[in-house]
Image: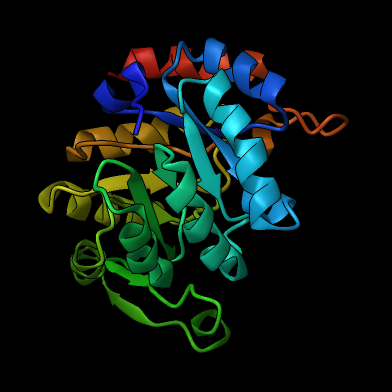
Length: 245
């Protein structure tokens, strides 16, 4: 797997959506390579089309590809695992129950594979029921440390904490960050992050001592008319990062 030079050395790496290959190139340049670019599996009718197109994104951005589900859709979990096995991207998004399959099919430990868990309204606990069937049942709240241990068992790299709704779950998020630092696990805050709350959200994880932080900033920096992520906003986020690290 080809490793992008900046992505692997950063404590903090941006994750933004790429609407097209040109948009991906613009965002990659705006962040000086300190970014992975989300391309959603849900946007493709089948594996073959997804693989063919995502290879173009890889070629244009030094393999700074993040294979996405599509708004955390658990029904995309199997497709994400299958195409990631072929693509060998730098980053894979998965629901909690899809992590083991993704890691097994990748057959290597370099690619970052996250596992989606959700806030519960209870500090120190997260919901694991994010899979295709489990998400239709009652939430399964477990201690964050247990969730991390389970993800490690499955070969996961990080917690994708979603939907955060910005700072609506701040106390819960602080507890998640502390647990990730304690257990040497990566953290990916996701949902409702914008230019205003970005610094505080990232700073919380930095202050907790999290080894690697991958904040996902999506809809707030997307141009509604075109669907493109605004490179100017990506540049602003990168500049904010430089005031934190």
